[in-house]
Image 1 (cartoon, rainbow, N blue to C red):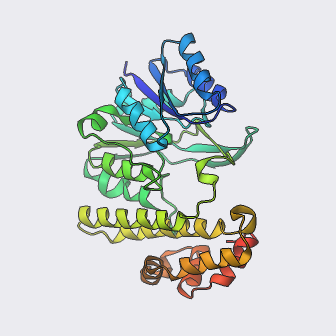
Image 2 (cartoon, helix red, strand yellow):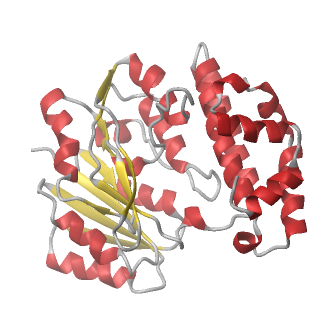
Image 3 (spheres, helix red, strand yellow):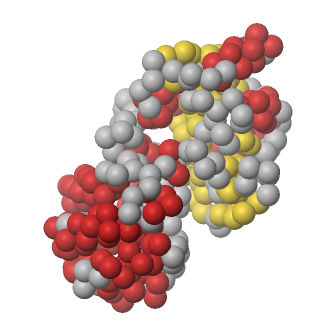
Length: 341
């Protein structure tokens, strides 16, 4: 029976960690190890991890200095003994059959990688959103040329993207070990998962997409994705430029992959604008307006917004990109303040 390594990066999540750990120990698929990587927590998270390690031999704990999520996952990968790996964020939790459902395509079809959907849940456990995929299979070159571009971004007319997060899937440790696939620091590249995916799927030969909703993603107001980032524009633009470079080097016809990447870039730019409201940023309206004005004038934003065909976009995206083209910074500031971006 194949063994699964479950890597859980942990940083100051004492409020959620017990539910996380209990959900893993309750899995119907029993052949696994849990690797908690305590990334320099200053609360009781590390102690909670140690308590679980004393109760169950399948639980391992690594304490390290704080370096961020990506490097914590790498530490877990270095210690993993399993045939496959699953990543679970420490403020999230799993339904009891998550591992079992992920393993079905492995045992029945020989898949080396399995991707499932997820449920977004509130702090109280209320389901806020479900992202469920249709069952699909990709083999050989189709993995890199047909599956991977759907992670870069969606075709707005098809809404066919897959989440660019590693926490809703199962990955082959043979591929990761043989090709030394690792995460960059999210402090350098805002989407460390996407860069990991790009390197990993170069070598994957069989990807199964399943209709599971067993991963429970908690909307945590203190999480990294919820925080105001004054350098967010630089980070999302650096990511875009790095991925554009990789795509142009790797695809003979990069048109569709780059259009998909640009679609995601526009979503990220909307996120940059959304955070520029007084409640979120703590700054004045004028200060927020100045930041949005800088965004609208950024040379990469100008180039991408002007070159992307508007007829490929949904109506809401078309309106947003048109405002970028016209540099409607004041209007975008008003919409951000009204939470209408």
